[in-house]
Image (cartoon, rainbow, N blue to C red; front, side, top):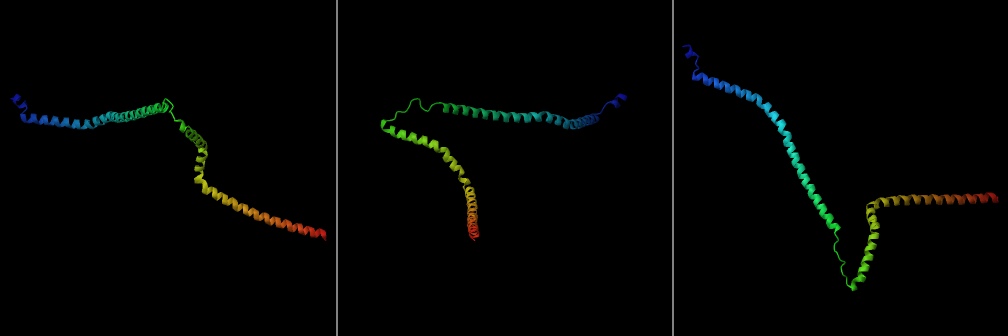
Length: 164
């Protein structure tokens, strides 16, 4: 009879299984945030590293394309435009000589023309300085005329003083 009372009834077996499952779920709920944080901490750098690596690969391919274009451009610039001199009819030789002299003259004067163009924004300041200098010169001329008049008066006074 004792054996009969010790046996677990199906009702209590189910209850103990549910209790075990509840305990396991509680344990999972406790461990899951820790596991999630560990997983995030370990995978997040890989995620950012992956993005960083992808960005670096894109930049590298862009720079390789730029370098390739630069090399192609350099080859084109180094390569002479035509291997042979172009034949020019004798009737045009005179015009070619004139054109070359004008081109040389233009190149020689180019720097002075560029300098003149660069000074255009400074012209108002230059005019203002010239106006100031002109005003100062006019003041000095007036003072010089007054001084000359005083010298002439003093000279006349000295003549009269010696003649008396």
